[in-house]
Image 1 (spheres, one colour):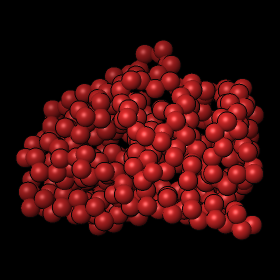
Image 2 (image 1 turned 90 degrees about the horizontal axis):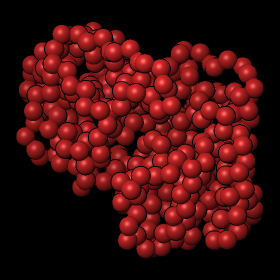
Image 3 (image 1 turned 90 degrees about the vertical axis):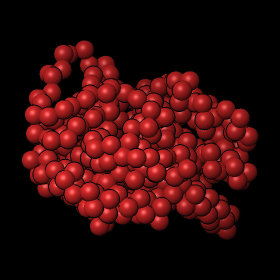
Length: 367
């Protein structure tokens, strides 16, 4: 089996790609990987070194959700078509909607990781305004989804969201994202601090909720404070009373160290089709305090301690309760750890994708 996989190097899709591609290659699946968005840093590509059966083609072409991407999308489609003609894969695994229309004679899987319209609704409570760009974007997503043999989403919530804004896939399926638990330290002595991960300027992550209330335990936040490409001065975040540390960006290894030490992880997002950071925290035996979102209930059930949706005061109350009650905190840490092992191991994800590839290819040959 030879699979061509597209990815981007801008967000969490790259971490997902690392787990999936590494696992497939270990199983002797040949992979051609093409990335978009920006050229990767040496740190981002360390995991690629020494992997057999892997052909990697990085590019800086803009992604479909970026500003004025149309020319880049046209050029990247031509580039991708040329790579497909050269390497002749058996199947396409496309992690962007815009490439769903390339090489229509090949079987293809399109993964709906997130999208602009559901992001906008989650953050602003309404659809984005109707203009030339949003019409182009919607048409691009509809075309890509319509050409897919199978559309995959990382949660049932995300799969149910797609038809509301775009088109109902001919066949849709949920495959939960996964991480390798061996990468995380679950038996380190915990320190009584709360960890949050997210860009301070990203309204979807809304880690600012952690900064707006008073906390009796330290709160540490990992994530950039400045939006790339935005030269405007950002207002300094309003801080409640307590000990706050804004740690900036961290490498994956540094972040794993923080997960290992943190007693509590706060998942504050108002929009999250899956959420890899809470999963990494769960594999590190952190107790999860989570925004009361349907997707978090789907994924974590009774393994998380929920606060009222988007309410910083209730978030602070829940943190106080967990911090003050060590038995309660340990109970929820164990619940999250066990749930992660049952549902979200990388090997389970890789099994499901590999089986899907063979099923889609076999169906295409019969047709």
